[in-house]
Length: 155
Image (cartoon, rainbow, N blue to C red):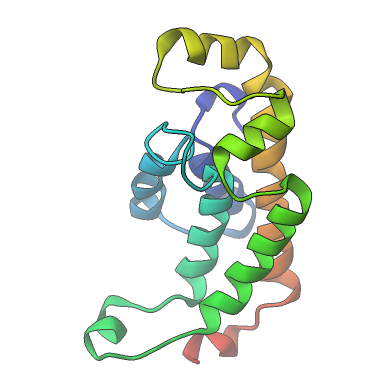
């Protein structure tokens, strides 16, 4: 994973694209706004978790055509909930601000330049957030490889 690239959801998606060929350019691009707990707010879902969920959804989620037909594909929730549960077990919360508190002892306002600089100085992209993104990518890959079957994508 590119340590200085930022964007936890994109880091997770890049790892999964490079190792398992999951996703495409549009999915990768669309994920950037989920960075830093959504729009760098630190208040939403951790971007690493979101990236893993996006990858799983790309494989077994409902298509636009299925959406228009009113189909209710629920298999996606079986696998995204497994990822969610692993993440929360490890970090105590799905929220970026709470993950930051666990890693750094505090959370940062990532849109504030000084706060962001302090975040970086504390090791955000050295070993903190990079380890979270690495874990999310690993757990997602394990779910895809060990639990998901191609025939499920039709359910």
